[in-house]
Image 1: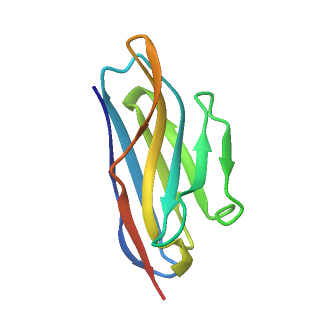
Image 2: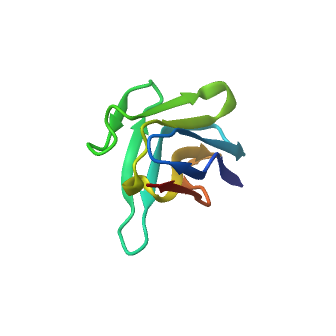
Length: 119
């Protein structure tokens, strides 16, 4: 059994910062790519930032220069540092990880954490 548990969401004023964390636990043999996605009401889930096991990163154009993704492989944890937040960043943020548990690779999702940016 593998679980992803997110933390760090909340309410912040425009221009502020938040740091999201997501820890993977359970029967983990290896973790490949990890990432953050978000979904606002009435919209499709979109990719925000991705990081490979080797540390290569990729960002959505809308967050480049403001968000930074990082990971601590020893802790099976991925982070999302969000600076200069805007009201349009308001969403539920989900972490995702491709994890090998026993003999199989699967994609796992966290439960989501709400980020609300007030104007």
